Length: 344
Image (cartoon, rainbow, N blue to C red):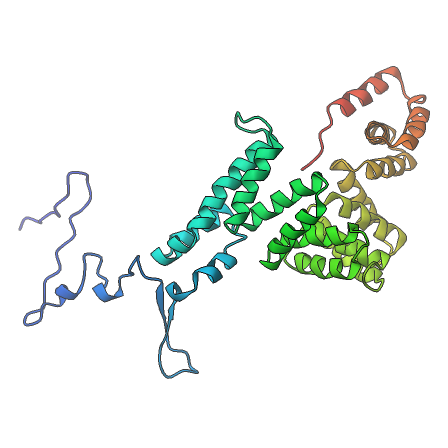
């Protein structure tokens, strides 16, 4: 008997066998071509979601996200980045309509950054940048509020900057909370307790600069009781997040045993990390450490970098070491310093 071979489509894929309806009850009528029931298919214009019954409830629950008030949804999404805003706008028609002003704000934000930094063929124009940021802020974007506040601060209009930071901070924007806290520290007169409050909120949200500023307040007892252990903890979190100044302070904490147990190895590690990222004082101190360990060539490179960054005391030590090196070694040191690039 000849064996039947399966049919193939022209592109080489096999033809799937058709499903046959069960006699007496055409059950295929309740299914679409994917095999899912029509009533189970999501409605792209609906934000409703049915949740399975929990062991604490005898009936299933139903959430209708489309019922969220527009103003509430706009407040929630005010600090969204452009990709997150685009994703949220695709959830349903109600969300798309509610988030329309914020999508417009993203356009103004983009143009504001171009005018501020002179990017993509646009000439630098602070006045047009501020105007674009303010239009974005008027549509509810906390990102635009913070950028407009920065320009006002640079212009010396600190009251207007603080007002914008307050709006962004109230909507939960970590950058706005951080800038508001720093503004209170620099206000006349300073308001350290308010500053610590906002820096603490931004720090818990993961803002690395806020963590560094909060650590400084804890270290100095500014607006809060002095607490070296807590200060060292926040320095370390900021350093692990890539904040270079915090790396230097972590190295000092380990070196002097403030907040952490004295640990030379950890101190050296964090000092080197800060130095490799361009911190001039760290470059000076790491160069001194290398000199004390007999690493003359490496020491001179770091001391030369520190000297170029304005650390005048580094030049005296550097000159002493250079006198002990050959002409070839001195040329090599200058070559390394000229081609040095800070780590990100």
